[in-house]
Image 1 (cartoon, protein in one colour):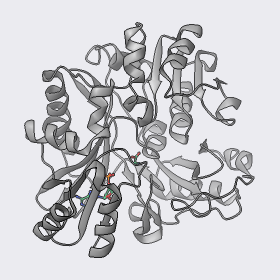
Image 2: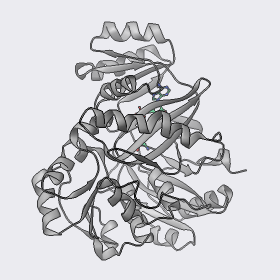
Image 3: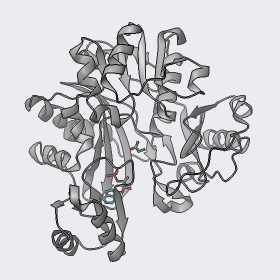
Length: 406
Ligand code: AMP
Ligand code: GLY
């Protein structure tokens, strides 16, 4: 089976590594646009992943059997639709189904229709409405841009002025003011084939830039999997109360969701609640979740893409645990650093139990993944790997998986 992976980040690198580890030959993988590091492992093609004509042409040229779409931008641009129209199997939702991630307002509408537990929210299109909603819910204030904002659309703050300032930036396209939900966050991924879902193993992401959850929100600075502190029956509960009803509701509306349903959850005192849906694998959670996958990943993705999730084995995961730490460039996520050399990756990768997934010279540069029998071991490996890598001005968090490592 020949597979085209669209995207260029550490998540796509992790998907490719997992495909290879679970039985796909590297000769049967193409990545576009990829990055130079991914290019050391598989063929990469300089194609814009959001350009329909170019992607369709590439899929035909390379005679691929399956396209796996990594990031949200191509999904929201309708790349999956274009590929399906010409008969290619795609792991990734069509444009109208990707609105589950692309529009927070649409996600709330689906949750209301399917009776899915989530926080209260008000859609606002004027500053007066924002102020009124903030007064209703109280501090801390949660303000979200309605559309995609590359991880910069959400602010959680008790500073009223900062909340209003953030709302003003996005108000012309609509903002959501939400009730603050308090509790541990969980990322739980489901493969979806339009009708049914299959859960993967849960992970926890670290969203803030600095140690002890300080600093601005980012795309994610580290993660670990599984979550030993989850209550019994958690995955079944989320499957039945969140993921399956979402997929059923989407099918009912004639916009079936095929691909990865990422449930961003908070475990509150009043039970589990959805904070967001994404329509793709999370980054960096994918690095730890797929690191532990036992099954042939190509088979799972193909079955999801072709409506056959219930035919064949379910996903199972290694007892080994995984921890990933993200190296970010100077100033991330506020400013972009100049391109600088990253040194020591090979040395990090030479450590047994360490894998490095690479993205780009600036922003979130790479993720070092450690795996082992215990969190203590996996963490030590990830940080040993990180210690061998240097990037002027680069930084990473030191407390990833600390809470589960003793
Ligand atoms: P989102 O882009 O919706 O995932 O939001 C980014 C981050 O903001 C989440 O991972 C949470 O840490 C935080 N967040 C979002 N919504 C809420 C909420 N209603 N209550 C508390 N924290 C939230
Ligand atoms: N790690 C969060 C995300 O991928 O959106």
